[in-house]
Length: 353
Figure 1 (cartoon, helix red, strand yellow):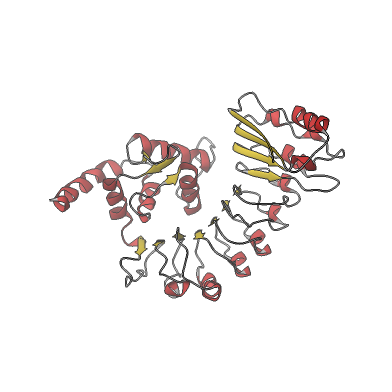
Figure 2: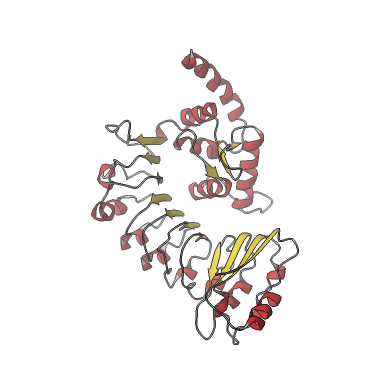
C-alpha cells in the first residue's frame, strides 16, 4: 500500500518541482539520509560550491540568491523546520523520495546496512553513512566525484587518504568527520570550494590549505584541539571561516585583507606589541554571529578607533571575551567603550573567563 501511495505522490510532486528556479539545488539534497538535519547557511554554501547558484541580473551575489532559493523551497514545503531544533531544517520523506528520484544515477548514498554496495561510476555526489568504510573503498570511484560527504568517523588510515586525494580531481565539496590528520596533498585539490572538518582531532592544518585559492567555505567547527591556522590564510580572499568551538591562540596575520569576508565566527587576538584587533576594521561585510576572544591582549599600541564596529550593521550577535586575570578594569572599560556596536545588534554578551 505504501509503495503504491509513494509511486502516486512522487510523480505529482515532480509537476511542481519542474517549475522551481531552484530545482538543481533541491535535487542535490537528495544525497542526504532521511531525517537529516541541516542549517540554512550550510545548505546554501553547498549549493554555491556546486555552482547551482550564481549572481543574478540585479548584481546580487550568490549567497543572497541562495537565501532566496532556500526561502522559496521553504514556502513550497520542500523544506520544513526540524522538530528537534528551530535552527535546523529537514526534508519530509516524500520530498526526500522526490529529490532522490531526480538526482538519479548522479547521487548515491553508501550505508552500513548495505555493506556490499558499489559506488556507480557515474556518481557525482556521494554521501557515506556509517563507519565501516575506509578510504580504500573509493580507490576507483573518485574520478568523477564532485561531492564527498560523511558525518561518520571513517575506518580508514592516513595512508589510504593520502592515496585517495590525488584521484579526486574534480572534487568541489569535501566533508569529513573526526579526522586525526590531513595530508599536505589536500592543497592540490584546485577545484575545492567547500571543506568541512567538523570535530577533527587536529591541532593545526597543513600549510598547503592556504593554496586552495578557490575555497569559499572552511568549516572547523568543534575542532577542540585546533590552536592555529596556516600563516597565509589571508590569500583566500573569497571564503567564509567557521571556527566555533576551537582553541585558536591567535589569528593569522593580514586577515584584514579578506575584504569580501562575510562570515567569520571568531577572532582571537594575539599577545604581542599589536594584538591584531585593527584588522577587524577592514572586514566591512562581517555579518551574523561574531566573537572577539582574548581581549586582554589589546595593547596601548593598538588603534582601537579604526575598528568601527558601529559601522557593521549586519552583525546580529556579538560576544566580547576576556581570559585570565586582569588588574586593570579601566583598560577593559576603555576597550568596551571603543568597541561600541551598531544599535541593530540583537544579542550582546560580555564574558570573563
